[in-house]
Amino acid sequence: MFDWLDHLSLGLLLIIALTLGLAPFVPEPHVWEKLKMLADGTLVRPIDIFDLLLHGIPWLLLLAKLGRLGWVRLR
Image 1 (tube, rainbow, N blue to C red):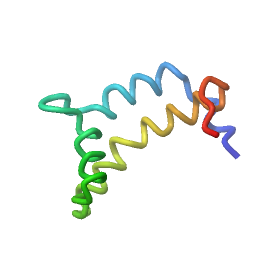
Image 2 (cartoon, helix red, strand yellow):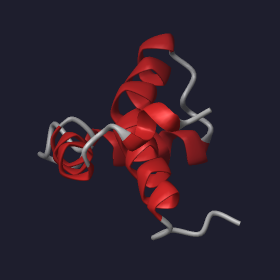
Image 3 (cartoon, rainbow, N blue to C red):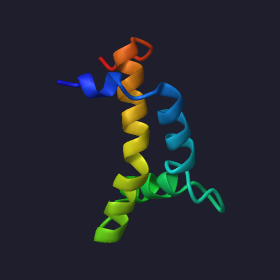
Image 4 (tube, helix red, strand yellow):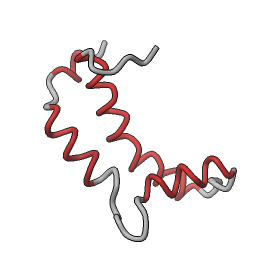
């Protein structure tokens, strides 16, 4: 089911997660801001939810790739 993930480069996923996943870097990473909003219950606007998805997907893909390589146990 996740064979396509095996064809993605780990280095490429790391670069994408560190750039798109954290951009903009100042004053704090966007994904961190959105995660704090989610925890506070203030993540309600559609643009904020889209932002969380946009900046969070690279990190999820990186975790999935590391899990496929056996570097991360998700259980």
